Image (tube, rainbow, N blue to C red; front, side, top):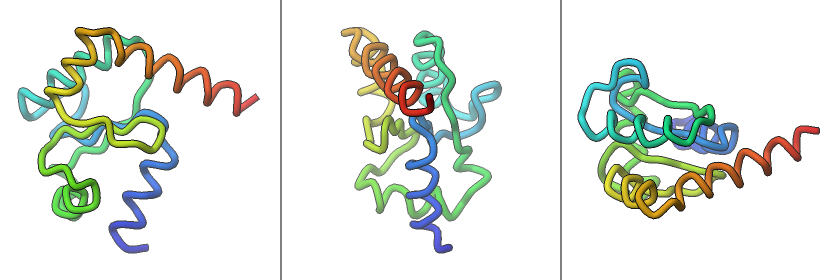
Length: 111
């Protein structure tokens, strides 16, 4: 599997996925830390990929996504955006709504 296929597979298998620097318990940049904090406020599980431990993903994902920076939040197979967009969505309530809808969708599909 090439790196783009790996990225596509990660995105399709994880309804809520954060590509970040570090881990949720130990973010390695302030923007990743803010993104984790925002997602944690929604009180739902999310997957993450540490791009610092995956240099090929760190190099290729920005090209694939047409988004140059990290973190990158993907929900239900769609790129939501980076830290600034995530924080705007927290402030206007749309992040929690989108995450709740996604969790509900996947819980229904698993039954």
